[in-house]
Each structure stands twice: as structure tokens, then as C-alpha cells.
Amino acid sequence: MPTGGGSNPGDRRYTTEHEWIKAEGEHYVVGITAFAQDQLGDIVYVELPKVGDQVEAGQAFGVIESVKTASDLYAPVSGEVVEVNGELIDQPQSVNDDPYDAGWMIKIRATDSTVLDSLLTAEQYSEQTGE
Amino acid sequence: MLRTIGIERIDQLFEHVPADARYPVLDLPPALSELEASRHLAELAAQNVSVKDWPCFIGGGAYNHYAPSTVGHIMGQPQFYTAYTPYQPEVSQGTLQASFEFQSLVCELLGLGVANDSVYDGASAVGEAVLMAQRVTRRERVVLAGSVHPHWRAVVQTYVAAREVDVVTSRLTIHDTGLQEQRLLELVDDDTAAVVVQQPDVFGHVRDLNGLAEAIHERGALLIVGVADATSLGLLKSPGDWGADIATAEGQSLGLPLQFGGPWAGLMACKAEYVRQLPGRISGQTSDHDGRRGYVLTLQAREQHIRREKATSNICTSQTLLAIGVTAYLALMGPTGLRDVARQSHAKAAYAAERIAALPGFKLLTPRPFYNEFLVDTPLPTAELRQRLVERQILAGVPFFYDQAGFERTLLLAFTEQNTRAEIDLLIQALVEATA
Image 1: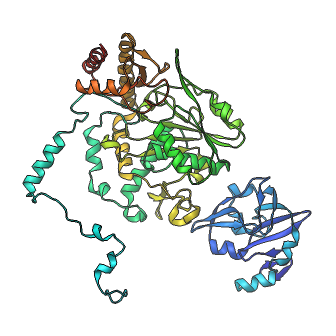
Image 2: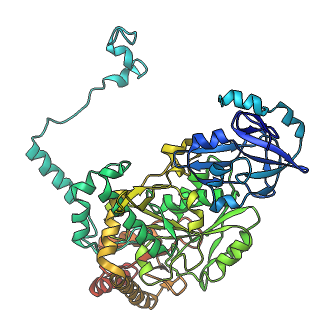
């Protein structure tokens, strides 16, 4: 996958809260960054919304729990959850092993995808995290 | 120091207290010596009447069961008695193991996969269970059976008071045939998070919960079953057997003294799949570097010291010492001992019910089957009858429902293995005399 800056793929956008969002067909896939999973340590549990739930940009949509702490997951865009990664229930470590692909969390049908333009690019995000 | 905080005189610290309340003149008698004071206190204490002095038939959430003396001795061990929260497993193995054993016993007793290390008491356990069901279902509305202990229902109301939660209680009425309750399922809708029932209910009735859990689950809600007298589980099906998603119980009956209404311990268990939403401390078994068995607090990210405002609860704590008492009681009694306590308690209630129902003017209102407690209609207003029984040195009845239509002359009576046949005969005789 093309990298736009550091180890962060350039085919998606990033939030200051360390989520990534990527267009996939008409929906948007959301996960957390390599930096975030590294800071959290071993992920032991991911609490995700249900399909059909509404999420709001900047608001918590779930919780990620590591051996060290528990943190909220923030939605980069508003919309409806169309799919959740059920694999994470039994394999939460996928978030550690492969945060940008197998470790994805939810897919959103965005109500306003122009919000994406205001999110960080891979270069900007890498700069922010110093990676 | 005064200068550092920017004042001149210490009096300034107390200026917000009204002047006349600052140094009131106390009209106190001359000081007593230690000997005199302890004598005086003993005299005052002797004016109390306890369940050791008079026959007790009071139930309604607290039951006068027998606790083997070993329970008190184990609770009195300084290693347990003085221990603080076992955050440091390397110096807390005894407490953590006791907690783990408590949880294992609670799982067995309540018939569910996972239990916490107790909450304040049976009432707050129901409150926590309701909040938990709201988190699991992401719904708000709560349906309470009218036959749930009124104090438990009041605690649930308190727990949800700050949020505009719709709490619905099923109607309870007294007919010629006895107590009747509105069908719970009529009240369950697609916004309902949980249905709460007490088993046996507050009137002692052992409810038929067959099919209830399935019907509630069809609506996407959870079933919470609360138990007031946990010795009943020696004989009856567990909440888990009835399909409960969350179960709670008051631990008092299991070796804890009545002690004026607490402190006791609230037992709380749930289906394993909901463990992330279970509030409170959980002790887990693990192995150390060398493969030896050890215990640690586990799943702590649910708790307030890790997750702060997102914690499953900021208003619970474990009653570890009392939970250790419950653990000692259950370990001492074993399944056979507990069954014997339950059988005796029920047999004594059954004997009393038969005799009381035959008295003129008395009628059994609790539907059969009951466990160790039942409500009777009597010829006298409840307060008056209780007073007349007190004059005859008998403790009976709980003032729950007097003010409700149909309940003005009812008496709630409970029986345990401690009540002898002679005591029960004394109660019957007193009821006859009091209402003659």
C-alpha cells in the first residue's frame, strides 16, 4: 500500500485522536493508527457499536481496552454504521498486528463526506506523531 | 501558616459559620469515668430487645438465620479484617483468593457464568443490575415487578433519578383469591432495557418464571432476578436456571448478622458474555512466572480507577470482609447444609401457614408455593396488631404496605430454622389473644 509519510498509508485521512478513515466503495472504513496501537500496548478488547447505530463526528463510537488502559474511539465522520468487524471480538490483537487492514473497526455510510477534507493527511499526521 | 494562606486570625476560617452556632454552650452532665460510662452504656443497651430475647418472625429482606460461630472467627482474622483494597497482588494473595472463592460460590449459587466481588447490599445490586442492563441493551426503560421489595424499587429509582428514565412498576392488587399482579409482559416494549423480578417475591411467593426470560429476550430486553433470602437457593432453581441475564442477591442470610440493617453484601452475577459491563471488583486466577497458581484483580478497565467517568460504576465498592463471611458460611454449610436450612425454614413456614389460615378472621394472601415467608390478612389494622404482639413479646410484621388499599390489615411473617415449634405455637396463641 502506498505510504504518504512515515509508516502511515497515504490512501486515507487521519484524526488528531489517532483514528484513520478510508473510502471503500460508497462507505468509509474506520480504524486506529499504528501509533495509537503502539501507545496502547496489547489490545485485549474492542467495544463496537451495532450495525444501524448512528455515529457523530468527534463523538465516541466505541471503546478500546488494552492491558494498560481503556480509551474512547472517536468517529471521524457522522453517519450510520453499516458493518462492524466482528473478528475483533475473538481477535482483538489484530488491531496491534495489522491496524490499517485486518484491524479495521467499523464501516460508516457518511452523511457528509466533505468533512474528510478537513482531516489530516498521512504527512500531517506523521508530522504530528513525530514518526 | 495563617500568613501563608492570607489570614490573620484562626477565627477567620470559621466566619461562614453563623456566630451563634460557632461556640454553642453545651449543657452536658459532668464527665463519667470509663467504668461509669461503660456501665451506663450497658444499661442503655439492655433496654433494646433483640432477636435473641424474643421470638422473631420478621422478614421482608432481613432474615434471622443461624450463623455458625466459625464465620465470625474467620471474619475476625486480622489478615482479612484489616486488609485494604488488594491492588498489590504480591501482598494480597489471601484476600484475592478469598474473593475468587466468593465469586465462584456466587456463580454456583446464582447459576451464572461470572460474578463480581460483591457490591454494598442486595438493593444496590439491583440498582447496579439495572444500570448494567441499560448499558448492554443501550436502552433506558425499566420494568419492575410490583412484588419486588419496595426498598429495592426505591433504590432503583434513586440510581436512575438523574437521568430521565421511564421506570414502570406492575400493578399489585388484593382479590378474594389473594394477591394478584399485572402481567409483566404487558409492560415490556421495544425500548425496555430490563425486567426486574424478585424470587421468591417480597410476599414470599415462589413465582413460576417459566417462559418469562424467552418472552423478554424476544423483545431485546434482559431479565434481572433478585433474591432476598439467599438460603432459598438451597432448594429452589437458581436465577440462571430461570434464564436470568443478571442475578442479584442479598448476602445477609448467608452468615451475616442482622446488625440493624447492614452493612451486608450484595451478590451480583451475569452471563459471561456481559462481563465487560459488570461493575465492581473482580478477582481472577492466573499463574506466575514459574507456573504457580496466583490471584490478581482482573478486567480493571471497567473500573473507576482506570476508566474514570466511563467506568461501569462510580457508586459501588466491594464489601470484601462481609463477602468473606458469606464465603465461610457457604463453605461450612455446603450444598447439603444449605438445603437443610432451606428445608427447615420452609417446613416451619408451612406449619405456621396451615395453623394461621385456620384462625377465624385470618386468610393467607400469598399464593402457594411460598418459601419461608407469607402475607396474611388479619382482623386488625397492622400497626395495632404488631403492637399487641410486642406486648406479648413477639416480633412480627414489616411495615411496608399499610398505606396501600387492601393492605391495611396485612401482616408479613417470615420463618427460619431458628424458629422452634414452641415459638410458632406461641405466635399462634398470641394472634388468637390479640384479635379476640
